[in-house]
Image 1 (cartoon, helix red, strand yellow):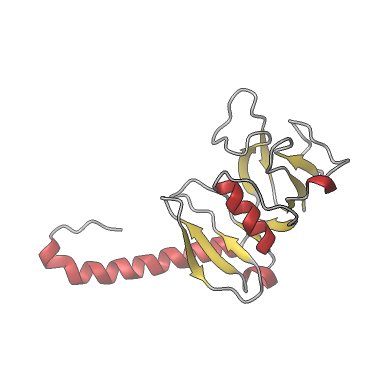
Image 2 (image 1 turned 60 degrees about the vertical axis):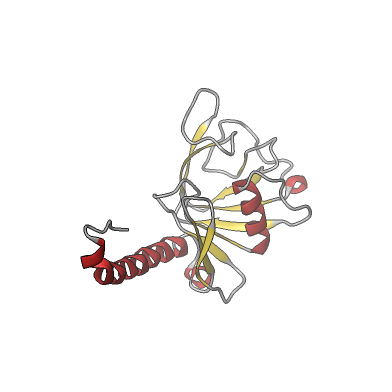
Length: 180
């Protein structure tokens, strides 16, 4: 939001500009969110954004049972992603540092790829000794399926061109499946 130079003189004009700026910002966030999934999923998904205080804001209601979240450089948080209802519960548990829901396997898209991340620490924000930073390209994820990931690599430094388990040994372990 732009600061008002003089409140009395610019109040009406700034309200109009702020409203237009928010709409443009929301349109960019929606476009970013939709980039995470195939068009048939993203175009009908509910779009939610997390603000700088960690609150969820709905930018668009959905029609297909999926949700998407944009990359938002103004706030720390996930890259563009889309998922089903079970994946939303898992993602919210991860974001809020709570236990994921029991018995609810979820599916997520991150077709725009992801920024680099720690393969071993769900909350790492930068590369540090021992947190096994990896590069992730476009991929899909199966989340909250602990018993179904047996046989997939859990190496701290995985080959990210093949399926592997990210955040192994944590409540947020999930199967990463590259798509390119």
